[in-house]
Length: 204
Image (cartoon, rainbow, N blue to C red; front, top):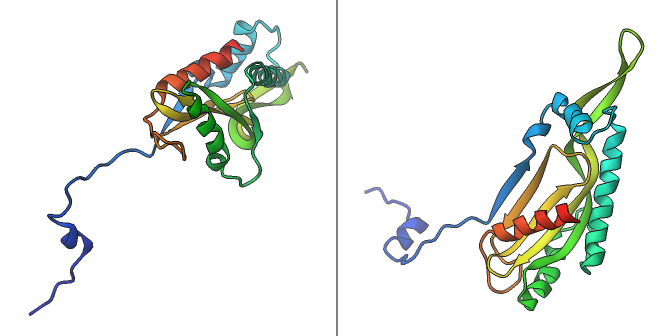
């Protein structure tokens, strides 16, 4: 007689009354559809922004404007500014800020985190035409740039964060956590908080 090894499933079979599956987090990638090719970048810099020469020097200007906008938004709304250290667990660092925002009972940005990270961004190399005129070739590359993490608390949906690249980006990542990161009450993906953060950033 062959004896069969009893497994955990055998033990639990008939004894499990409730089995729930749910997502730990949802990642939303926000793309700018008209900035996915080099020709679109040139059209954006010259046609949309109105610069006569689509130079990559403009990338730095756009980055500095973005930095000032975030700093101004944080100062105007008394939002804590946190610089993440290398290898630091961002969620653990931000949990107290989320808890404090949750305790107010109001939706809002709990804190803004700053980190230097490698991102896929637009860059350029200089060349010359057959007549000697300077020419720029735009391409995507991995570069270490400044990233801002807007940690949010929404009174209806719970915690979330929006990650924004200060450099001329190809895409932004917006991970949305389901659990409360140590804050009581739990939560579901905060679509309203994410939308509010993008609106406030663009209006800054």
